[in-house]
Amino acid sequence: MPRLKIVQAGDPVLRQPAQPLSPDQIGSPETRQLIEWMRETMRDAPGVGLAAPQAGIPLQIAVIEDLPQYSKDIPPEYLADRERRPVAFHVLINPRIVTQSDEQVEFFEGCLSVAGFSALVKRSRQIVVECWNESGEMQRIEASGWHARILQHEIDHLCGRLYIDRMDTRSFTNMDNMSRFWKDLPIQAVRERLHGQV
Image (tube, rainbow, N blue to C red; front, side, top):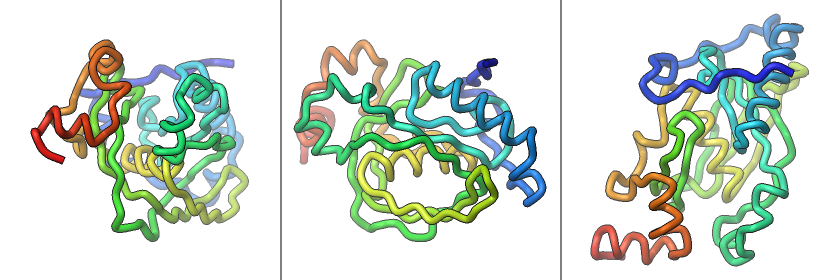
């Protein structure tokens, strides 16, 4: 199965709103093929989500999957804090967030298109998304915790936004320093070290 090339920050396609798919495009063989390539590219990376613009294709399609093996080495208390549970593969076409909680949570976030870096990003803890799936069926996805974070991250891609637009700039770090200094600290302790406050 071919793998798509993941484009990096600086490519104009990541900064333009993606085009919605027409009803005819949604169920087409070309769209189904693209979704398969996106799934394989996401798994190969590996990542928990991939939007079509990240593959240089300005269409409103994203794929999401958080496999159990991705979190097997993460301590249970960290998984609980992040409300992270496995998420089955699913497709978002022309998604829109219809509701989101005022309550926000902040965790380190990375991106396949900003490879090698991470930063603290606040996101709504709960959201509801309406979208089409690959079969042309309207879906309503209610998500909380890490799943809600992934959905918001991928929908941002379809709007021409990256997590760096929302990050706490003082927390921006490469992955070596993330592992060395920040990975094992509670978020409150990270904020105190970065800002001298809670």
